[in-house]
Amino acid sequence: MLPTTLVKSSMRMLLTLPLGFSSMFSDECQPVISHELVALTLESPLIVVAQKGSICCNFVVPIRASDPDGNWEVGAMATLIDDVGAAAIYSVADHVKASLDFNISFHSTARTQEEGEIEAKVIAEKGKLSLVVVEIRRKRNGDYH
Image (tube, rainbow, N blue to C red; front, side):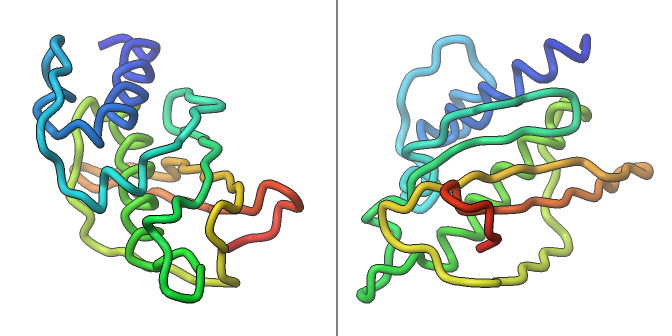
């Protein structure tokens, strides 16, 4: 595939994930039941920049993905990180890869309805392995989550 086609495919993959995996690979995009956590973590992404090897989205922390104190659940955050990272890989590899090593550093909490930005960049590829760095920042001041 051409690089621009891969980028468009990765954007489509990310935007149709809440509908289920079958919609990613068909032209019909008929809704199917998907894993609820994926659906709620991806309920509001707005793709800002998508290019070969990177994707950047704005989002709002959904109410349904928060703990009793109103903080963003770390599992929901990890799901978003994994999915946006997969979309960045898809933009260069034309397929989704499994996550083998997943390290997350939490610098602060994010509150329900807080606006954020998530950016994934493919840093390296070697054989079947890809290295992706994903950063989540607050929209209002650029601080890391």
